[in-house]
Length: 348
Image (cartoon, rainbow, N blue to C red; front, side, top):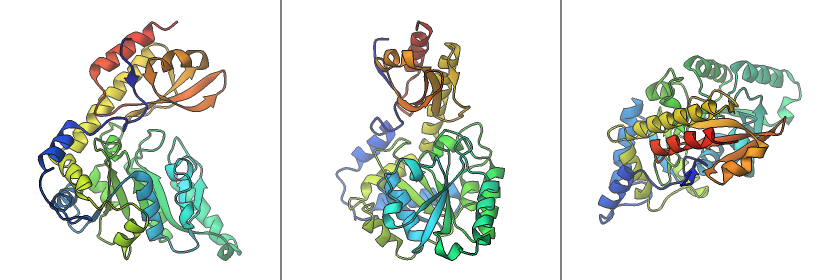
């Protein structure tokens, strides 16, 4: 294989050409700042139309960790925590950002990355049955990821069940959508963006991992953002002074379905990647229908693959093997997947 293939993540490249073109064509124009620029306003309206939520509050933040930490801190009261599965991004890969604001991440079992409504209900029932619960961190909201850290996708029925438990206990449901496009465009997904908006209190549309240089769009579908949410954004260092950077990009992403076209392309490339590994005799760790694919690699082959392919080693397994993650994006090319398939077939 002549060229190194980068499959480490879906944000190891620049912006999609259409996003970059919009940045360039607006570059010389003057604008307001801190979210009041014309492109942020245009992007907000396009997102309201895409979600079918005309009253939605939409704000643009710089990145995923800042978005999770800001939104969770703004919703929770002192002494409250957020319920998430043990593999959740906020519980594993965000360096304690949520806990740094004084809110515990309360973890539940992970089922291929997903939370089960029965686990959530069981936890809450046990919690409030304990006479000493006032001495404990109070459950204040529920956090799920769509798609999950392991590339799995929630069904409408699974989200409805979680939402039902949240209503029973008066808990807001927050959906981390860092890779939302890849979940919604997956063949395994049986709902669309407007449906999701109707079934949660808040969510965000990830731009960083879906074609933008940076930026995430937080959406409160009913417009009921926490009091002083703008101030919370700035306090957490998540506010762009030059807000046009996010506004222009989301304006492009939500023009002519670009956000969803990017997601569809990445999923198609991921399917070819999966076929390449399976065709060469490798086993998959799970059945991910999204742009993240998890492959079981014999340890003896890791150095060979690492010379030619960029990927992440996620978890050591038994029998001298490692679960590794390969991720596709808008920049992944068909020829790269053809080269990958040919390379894998020639491995000893």
